[in-house]
Image 1: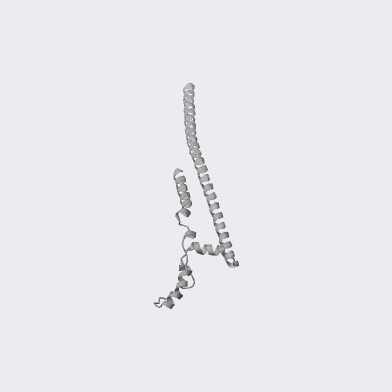
Image 2: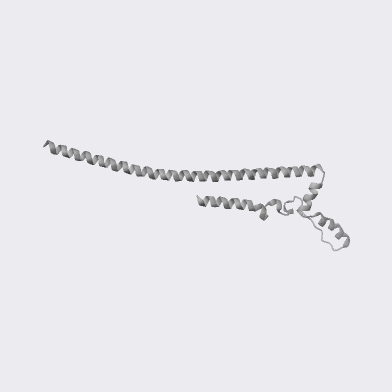
Length: 157
């Protein structure tokens, strides 16, 4: 009982600490590994080609500046993407809250089960003690009946 409560508390603390420690995917920097278009970089030593590769370097920016650019953009595609992202984040938050509620119910059910289990064990022990008393009482009654029969047989002779 105590072990399951401690385990549940550890899991809840770990889940609560996950976003604060930076383990969430939304806090991670953009990784171009998942792009469909291969990354090509030209390595040259001339000054004219170096200026042409400089805009490519400038287009790569940190995640915070690109998200700020998306929010300041007024294009319908950017607003649709931010709306979809907002809806997905809202759905994830709802799922997280539902999961927390279900875990709390599980903890409550486990504690109720433990109390019922303890009651069952005490009732089982009481039942066993009463059964023992019943057997002892029946044994005494049988002994008294047998002594009565012996006395009756002795009286008839």
